[in-house]
Image (tube, rainbow, N blue to C red; front, side, top):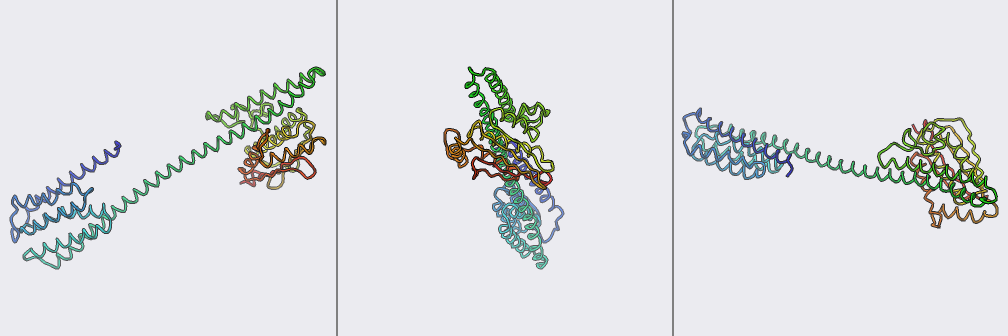
Length: 417
């Protein structure tokens, strides 16, 4: 039992004890003002019967039926012995109220009937009393007591239901919080995938180039190794900024939290990667050997920080796939367009003619989710999820004329509102 429940139970016991003492005091003092006739003078037996009619209220919460039966039996004994019936009604009245309050409508109706019968019996055995008035009292008073008890019963039911709903709400909130944590971890995993896949692809290309020209062209090899070092540093900084989320830090790309694209944000003042950093991304991929052309058309409209970040990541992932599955000497085009209510993008690539068939097979395998030594298409799944979360669409697949394309559309800030 918790401390609160202990205090609640203790307070109810104290309340019942005070109630019984008060009723006993009134019931024992009332006979002092009773008429001398036709009732019997209150003596020790009468006081005992009065006490027996009230003391059962100690268990009125846990055993209201026992309380009512015991109190009514003592009341009948008081009436049968010729004592003033009024002194025996206090216990049965509180017992009827308790029965309706703790057992509901049906028990309250039965209890009211029992008390009404006892009341009528008291009117019958009383000489000189008004039986019609007694019958009216026997109907009205028990009904009123039962109604008040039923109101208390319904209030208790509503409180119990409210407590259950509150507990259910807490459980649902905890479940939603757990789902939110899971979703956040998945988002972090997606960010790490983007960071690692992009930068390691660039590192692999540059390292291969350095190894190939290490003896024949030392300056080019040194330049490639420098790009490897710079790209590795960028990858480490991005991973630190993303992993900071696991420690309750700021979102990647926010000021003071590290950068999601260090080279770009060094120029952009620590902002979240977006359209302004695409030039640096294209330059970096171009340094790895892929000829990338970037075109932006249409009247510029606000997209929102989250949408621009998604555009950057989708373009980054698409170009990373070109590096992974096509390799150097490929060409890619990033076409961005602002329309009236959405932002559209198309990333396409071609492949070297000698490797066109093999590259297309590899790209199609990744698109369909088949597993090979290069991966299982998680990047495309992440891109689709980014677009879907922002209310947009994304489609990806092989081109009829060769190569691969990624097409997506995202609502602008005004359209989203």
